[in-house]
Length: 484
Image (cartoon, rainbow, N blue to C red):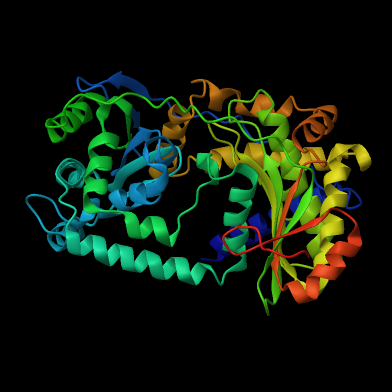
């Protein structure tokens, strides 16, 4: 025992001596070096076309017995939804789980609970999906339920009325949320009702939707010819192809890929403040922007780096100024809504009512700054690039995340080496690139400045800024008679 104690003391002494020597050589006046991350290696996958026309993508990940399955559809509400039936796509997706020709909605829910899984579905502007996450041993039975919902929904009338009533209540509640109102009015103002990007869900369109509309949308939209089936997890590609083929054997070939042909935009209007009155509002919601480039723009990476500096990171220029320096908001930012068409550039956030005019001045100041008024620094450039590069591996951290990333690559029509070349493309961006794209894609002379707030408090101060003339709109984005 005594010998063991002596050896332990000796080892501790050696460790302390080694640590002391290392500390002695450490220069505490200099920050420790930041190690460079290892190069990201995206997962591999196989791609085949099934007899019905659907594409099957399989990526093996054998660490855990988990599997994610997603059936994504190219094209969405913007391509397949009638303009006067806004909401029918959302209704159809929501009602897939309300019952099939063999099971009621309750029976579907109970079956999934016993399997420890959940099937989610939805239709967005330019794509739709249905999918699930389950353990390996439950793949076949959960897939069978998904196939039942996809191919044999009954869209019960009582479920439709329940969903309609819930949606109408939500729409009424949203009229009291200045941020939602600002987003809807911004879309209508920037794009107009004739463009799918400018159409918003309204009580009138919700009330007009019939069960026949939903059945017709389902029959037209959920077709294998525009489907991308992504399977990620503990699977064998050959075996999972057989499992998918068996489950979807009744899915008959049909459907063509969407063309994404959008109407031309109206001539851009001079910068205008569109003021929506919300009496008594404790804050003003800002939405400032204009149509931007599509996702396939060659300037995607410079725009991503520039906008990360402008309004994505917590210490971004907009947030550091308006929140941290001035205290006008709990948080503001900016984004590009890349799509197949001209997705909007938008900056904004919620502002203390009494500081609406001051905040607007700072917003415009920062937009001018990225166009050269305030030079980008090496630190800003490095911070933005690191944030973008380090975010990519995180998005592959689960089978669900991996499925989403791979599926999005094909939905957006990106090159198959996109993930492998991502870091290099980000690193290639220069400060000159940032100024160039800011000047090209942020037109300060043609901005739509939508502000939803208490008109009696903010109208005169906004007018006094001299930034732009003021046009009054109602909560739906329609002009209000009478001047500001």
